[in-house]
Structures are given as structure tokens and as C-alpha cells.
Length: 111
Image (cartoon, rainbow, N blue to C red; front, top):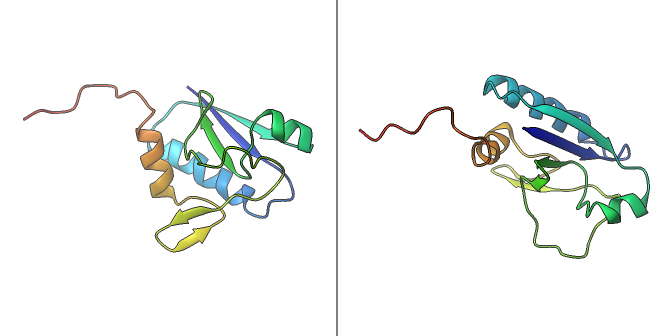
């Protein structure tokens, strides 16, 4: 599994978000290659359809899809958390989003 962590250096929350991502991956025992992608130009951000920093993608799919279809660029992204709007998702939010895309090692117990 490939996890892309997209950010731009002007975003004040990207280092915290990267740390939370790595902690969740370790806690969940998810063996994933984390690719750090620093976006440096508006053109590159537009080409990658970058909705803001930080963005988490697994195998090219945004873990937190947005309805914005045309707003891409070098900007900060916000996430609706239980504590309100924040610049990074909570560990629980990341854990939940990852669980929807990480294949289970065994089928769920039925009984």
C-alpha cells in the first residue's frame, strides 16, 4: 500500500499531520510506504488537484474527499473534527479512513 502525504511548506499544520499519520500507521500495524510530496508551485498543485495541505491519499485516492471540484492550489486545508474545524484530522479520523481502504488480514468474525 502506498500512502501519499501532500503538503506545502507554508502550511503550519503539516508537520503535526505527518506525525499523526505515522503514529496511526504504526499503532495499526499497517505496513505502508509513505511518500512525502512537497508541492511548491500553483501549477503543480492544480495538476495534482491538490485541495490543500495536508492531504492524505492511499493508492491515489483522497482519504477525505472534498466536494470542491475546482478549488485547488497552495492553501491550507481544514477538517471537521469533533472539536470543530482543525488543520489536521484527528488520529481517530485517520484510523477510520484508513480502515476503509486497508485490506483486512482475515474476514470479520460472524459469530
